[in-house]
Image (cartoon, rainbow, N blue to C red; front, side, top):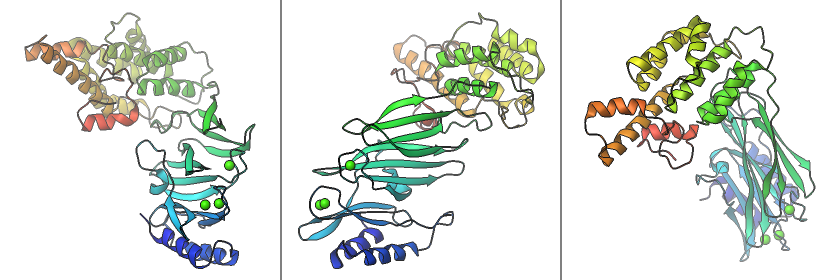
Length: 407
Ligand SMILES: [Ca+2]
Ligand SMILES: [Ca+2]
Ligand SMILES: [Ca+2]
């Protein structure tokens, strides 16, 4: 790999040397004149920095530049010449974000208190509705730089931030983000979680996580909804039950039947777990009336007349869903019976059918269909391949496009 930045900095270091500050300033100024990406708002910061990092007597350099080539390098003096080396990545999907975003050098301070300058890269990835800053910190071992922190800061539905603060052992990273990450129910309140990463001798490790208690029903509801979305039905059940008990004072500006929706979800969870209607949740929401009550009544009829998939599919198709809420801020804006969820339920049924055909437990197609519809039970929406690991939101689309076996 290599490119405009790596070539320019190597040329500068080998032709001029690392100690001529005026040339370094000129080099950075020249790089800053390259055309910006059309959404860049701020002037490009200095791309190239000269610093001693590895403990030997030569100066090193680091450079990060996101406009063309998406490059981040460090430069070491070896065998009579400076040469650029890519920074090591710790990204589990094998695509270091500072190669795919707009990276900049955020700090060259001594982050871990060992007396040597470290490197903090911040790489900005902009999407249609969210921006993610990946923080990557590197400290220098004898063998070269090592990635000692990688963490995304998601700027999305609510404000986020990150900061370096004085800690017991060097600096600490304090990151605040929407607690659910990029979880697409934007019109609801999103609680903000604070995480602290401190140096543990090897890397910056998570030492503290804090999440304030919900103070309003939309926030309380969304936490339960997020648990439902990720398939944590125990937490979701507890959250929806809390909504129905009215522990928090509701906001009178909202014309949302939160309790009705919570009862409806509680019944849906029972259905997805293959549990009988023993708690009267469906009756409770039907009794409340309105569009939510009517939706729930339709759901109940489909359950008794047809199949689980029909029941969920009917919610997806129902025009009632559009009538329930009109996207009021902090209102439900959507019915929450998403296409992916319906398809995932279908995939769960396929799994059951495939397994039972292999087992020889069922032979008639008609019986299979009927049985699968009612026996989804333990094969929850969250763990379709029953490997004990819950399926998270990011896997849904992969599972649907692929074989339906998610990790
Ligand atoms: Ca050095
Ligand atoms: Ca060196
Ligand atoms: Ca250090």
